[in-house]
Image 1 (tube, helix red, strand yellow):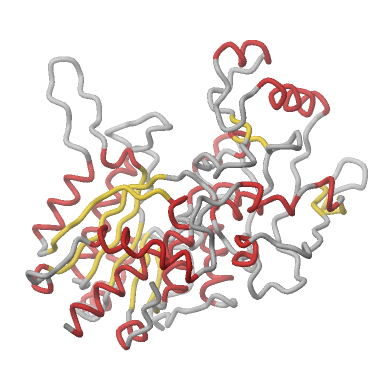
Image 2: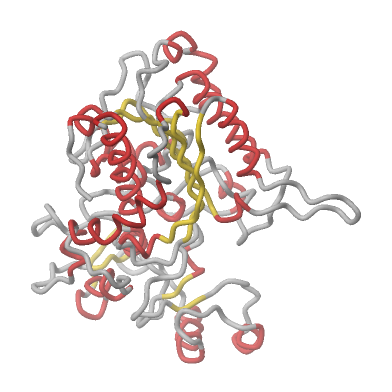
Length: 421
């Protein structure tokens, strides 16, 4: 699926709602060149900047007029209208995933959630910049109807409203669901994907992008030297066990402070680890800090691991037995890809150790390489939870980089065929 044509050397993109940079990392690895990214949370943007603007994964020609700092699309539209208009027709791709909490099937779906309107800002940027291609990623619920009050007609899925608006702007829009596990990610994370192409580029021989990606899947996995079968969780995080690595000091006091996994690079890494550890040498990844679990919590987690079927959420009866009101709690199945990660670290328990995952283990399950540092606070609680984006949230919200790379290759492939005939 490698596609290093002339167009790949010049292919440019803007990432809207970039988060910590999962999609941008994938696009960069596929051969795309970034212009700029928009992310409103300072913690998520600090991770993005550290890795993708200043660090070893850098591939942005950031414009001088735009400060390298957290911002919003609204701010961009208000402060730099002429600069954005000057980009009209000069950008190949606008990519992004508008925040999705209002659509999530896992949360409280709310048609009136103000975050649902952020896709309109995405559309506004598309209208001004008029890129050749579009890529939009969201949760499955983006394509599900909101339940209507009794006697009223169900509202159209938000995805169909967005699709109609983009078609009005002159795009042929294709939509489908993709499961990350099909592209080497050790996680059953299904996402709604929208790919748009300028109508005047589409000819009679034009092939649905999702047929291209389906046909190219095996070649993509082979090019990464990844197995064709789904990657198991134990192949992704089995080298991060406390019992084989031991612990070392992280922060706080010796007695009550935080410890972290004292990582030792394995002598026989799995195929997946070879991809994740590429270019890391003997370097330890960051974000290996362990949660400080109380003894009672460890005992509860041990009991959950004993009675719970791995990979299946606790039943009502089990929750009663353990004495927890928490709705979603699952022990990872070591021999399968993980369930979809969320931004709440205690939704998933480790498969063999009585603890939640470290941020690095979550990053591994999302397919972030070990050379990608996650920055910021580890967690936040209370009211700040809705305002801040700590490390667990950054990773849980991200587009898996391997999925981003497969999508990036697909669009480059389409581009090469349309431009070279």
